[in-house]
Image (tube, rainbow, N blue to C red; front, side, top):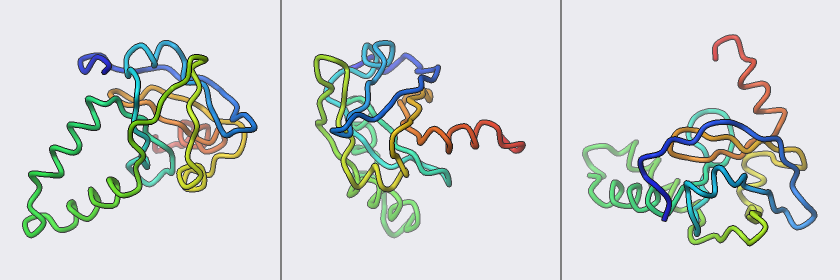
Length: 139
C-alpha cells in the first residue's frame, strides 16, 4: 500500500522502452507500493502523477464528499481527474510500468523522460518539459 507519511524527492532520467514502459526507481517503489494509479498532473505544465493506492483512496474520498453546487469548478476538475485516471496499474518485477496512450499523449512523452519525486506523488515528465520547468526564472 505504500507509506502515507513519507515524502518522495529526487529525480531520475529514464527512457520509455518500445512497449511504452518506464522504470520507477526502487527508492520510489518502496514508498508508493503496488498497484498504483496514474493521472494527469495538476497545474499548467503537462505531466503524469503516480499515486499510491492510499493517496488514490484519499482523492476518491475527497471527491465523494465534494458538493457540486458549492464548488462547481473544483467539482469539475476532480471529475475530469477521476475520469482520465488509470487505477490498479502494476509495477512489474523489473520496476517497469506501462504508461497508457492517453496519458503519454497528454504529457507529450516520447522517449526521454524524468521520473521525479514530488512530495506525496511520483511525477513523470517529458525530459525537455521538466528541464524547462526547473530552469524557468519564475520557478
